[in-house]
Length: 447
Ligand SMILES: Nc1nc2c(c(=O)[nH]1)N[C@H]1C(S)=C(S)[C@@H](COP(=O)(O)O)O[C@H]1N2
Ligand SMILES: [Mo]
Image (cartoon, rainbow, N blue to C red):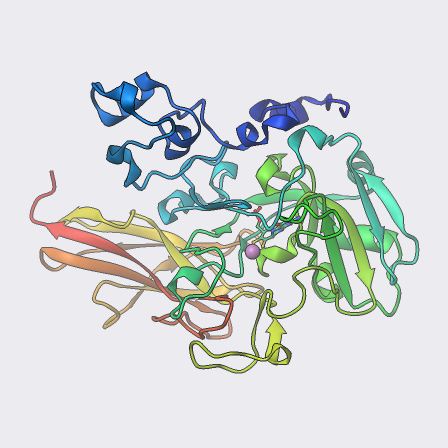
């Protein structure tokens, strides 16, 4: 067994999860805290907990098959709970993928517990991660002086930078495509905007010598391919060298001033904001500087690629007609109130959310309460730094009682707006930036 980390922060991570690598499941799922979750019932449930959850004693409990989820709970929307990620909706548990309901993204800076999780493979066991001995290698055919750094060396040798960066999965919104696209059925919650602290990718790559023929980077992480095949990577993506050399491209060891959460890539990850999240490699072990477009796992079409010309929904698209997604399109979310809100007639309702536009800034956010017939401008803040999302706020009043929807639409600095309906069908279901909307019930009086 590997040496236990000694610094307090790292110990925090190891305490949150089990130290016993054989209990991989226990490391991730929050059963102790919430034995009444559906996951809890599947795995182990105490009679008392079950009785409490269904709201009464269970006279025939001794006939209940082990692991049965009581029907009273089986149909509930309650999601399986991931440790440190309470409230997220788990879409898949092998590999783990979990998204954040819009109202839990209301904070200006996304708290760690509300950052979505998108795993392509099997993360390294927590017990095997030692931030003190973790090494990051820099190499590749266009690297002049390949080197290896411990996290302490990165911290000592390079200037530290903190940026708030939006990370959105390329497949966020996939669930709305018709015909449906295979893959995680993300609704709106595969996006987050925490702060990241680390060193500039540029500073580290330059220290290792970027050859004149360098065109791309590639990231390798410590996670394993879902098949368990040690010769395969779960994912290995990268960015054109120009994106890697931007001020905001980081090799980060902290998120919101703390260790990066285990599921978000502890102890080290790349963050390139504004691009599909897949370029922001987690559990980062190695970066290569390439003299050609990186050819790692999930770099080639159709992964993270869309047809270069619009195609009819359901079309077969030849691989050579795909292009790799770069900057993500303009988008916004309504994060307050939660959809389904009750509102008293005659009272103004505060509505707010965030807007972002890949590499660009957002210029305008508009809101409609009449299904898009009329729009008014929301107040829009500047981002705290480039590649952070922008807070928008407004106040709406409803003319009469009844069912209303609040729609929000953002426009980027080039004048491109979000579409009202799901845009550009593509085989893998990427880049759905359709407007988000919430339901509001307006009544004379709200109890
Ligand atoms: N090593 C590694 N890095 C990874 C992934 C992964 O599975 N393994 N998933 C990528 C994808 S597809 C996305 S959208 C982001 C999600 O980051 P998060 O899980 O921290 O939210 O991480 C990216 N980096
Ligand atoms: Mo992703």
